[in-house]
Amino acid sequence: HPLWQNSVYDPVLKPLKISYDPTTCLHIWNNGYSFLVEFDDSADRSIIVGGPLENQYRLKQFHFHWGAINEWGSEHTVDCKFYPAELHLVHWNAVAYPTFEEAVMEGDGLAVIGVFLKLGAHHEGLQTLVDALPAIKHKDTVIEFDVFDPSCLIPQCPDYWTYAGSLTTPPLTESVTWIIKKQPIEVDENQLEAFRMLLFTSDGEEEKRMVDNFRPLQPLMNRTVRSSFQ
Ligand SMILES: NS(=O)(=O)c1ccc(S(=O)(=O)NCc2cccs2)s1
Ligand SMILES: [Zn+2]
Image 1 (cartoon, rainbow, N blue to C red):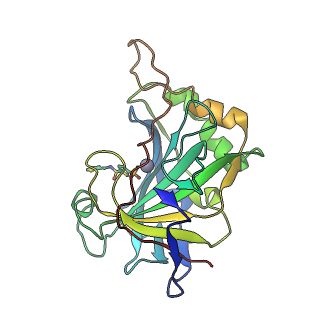
Image 2 (cartoon, protein in one colour):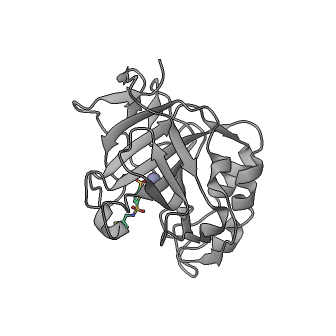
């Protein structure tokens, strides 16, 4: 969605509190649409609270969307500008719902933190993920990933936009409180190219490079985007 021009400062918005336990990390895999790192969400060990949220939400997985070239790739724009990639950290409301699958169907079920990636300096924390990508080149490949703290991918600056929206892939349910960080993280060209070496296709199939795995920009309609900053 287009952010910034259509946003209104909301002084009531609190700072988002993020506390992840790096040992809840389980594995990294290629699901044929993106690559995702999944977490053990059987207890409140990696959670976010505050910001626009009423409850605390548990970290389930994070994944990325990116373009074939650096001119596009993000699923949100700022001032009509696309970023080359966007990180989504998916959390679910385990206070209100017994399972993730049920939370996915509810208006206050999910909270997704969006972080823009921009071309710039090498990102040390991201490199740990990049080094694992050759092992999950094909769809439905997975490797164990024991310890990773996704906080290293989230900018220090507390400023964010928030709006009530939907999943950007099927089932596209309107169950997401989007929390998009204003400040991007910087990654270098080699790191973005490593994303583009992944494949949508399984081993043995005709190779299709995993690029442009983003949903096209959708109209904001009559929705209000609130900002935590002036
Ligand atoms: N791009 S995004 O952050 O809006 C997401 C799209 C899909 C997501 S999911 O992990 O919640 N899978 C959806 C489901 C899994 C099981 C039942 S529905 S998150
Ligand atoms: Zn996503």
